[in-house]
Amino acid sequence: MMWKALAVGTAAAGAGLLLRSAYEKGHFLVEELTIVSPKIQENHTFVFLTDLHDNEFGPRNRKLLEAIQAEKPEGILIGGDMMVTKTKQGMGNLEITGTLLKGLTAIAPVYYAPGNHETRLEVEKETYGSKYRQLLEMAKALGVVMLVNKNVLLDRDLAVAGIRLSPVFYQKLLWKKPVPMPESYLNCRLGDAAEERFQLLLMHSPLYFHACRHWGADLTLAGHFHGGTIRIPGLGGVMTPQYQFFLPWCAGSFEQEGKWMAVGRGLGTHSINIRLCNRPQVVVIRLLPDIKIER
Image 1 (cartoon, helix red, strand yellow):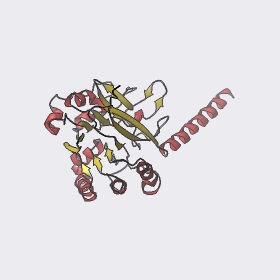
Image 2: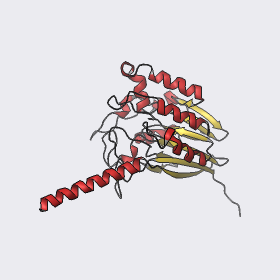
Image 3: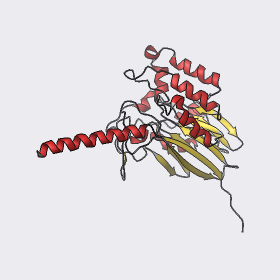
């Protein structure tokens, strides 16, 4: 009887966790990050999205679009992995991505840097054919600025860059160390940072914050880790898609040497279709001038 009761209790707990996960996957949170900098000359508001992975919040992502529009952003920043390119789950279908991009461009200018799934579309042409070219053409037709190893000036006090990381930086790691990024990697692809402006950098992986800081990024925006899939209070995210465990930078904001990195929890899932204590996330970024009041 004891074993039967234990089995029933375990099954009930498992069912409860699956129900909780299903709820979380369908209900995103809007969360804010505010950064004050002497480089900023006026207030700016951006929305940061990452790792949608073909997820939908309402028909044609209506709920997501309504939440973004309510923030009245001056720009929308996309950190990659909008689609799924795992062959067992999807073949790089661009329909959901295209529908969302069309809705986003009706709200504000959109700046889109690739993640590892967009990179897979380009690199594995024998599997995905012309899907990467289709993505670029679709983005261009909608007015989306694709930040593929590109840095653009947004305003008198802002610049935003996006890097397409080589596939080697997304290798499965388990207990291995990440592949080191050469010192010249970012400069060779992006040129020099706009040091006189507040420099934003979209880099899908958060493993290279050190390289981003030293390139000159004031705020690096990353994703990729899906918040660690399952988050345990006091311990953080359990596992990344690269099979690393309990990394402190699975999600959240981090500051070192006066430079910031924000790691979004993302909006979807793919290989491990679970979220627990890890709601999908829209990040609202407030950039404010550092105004000193003289007395």
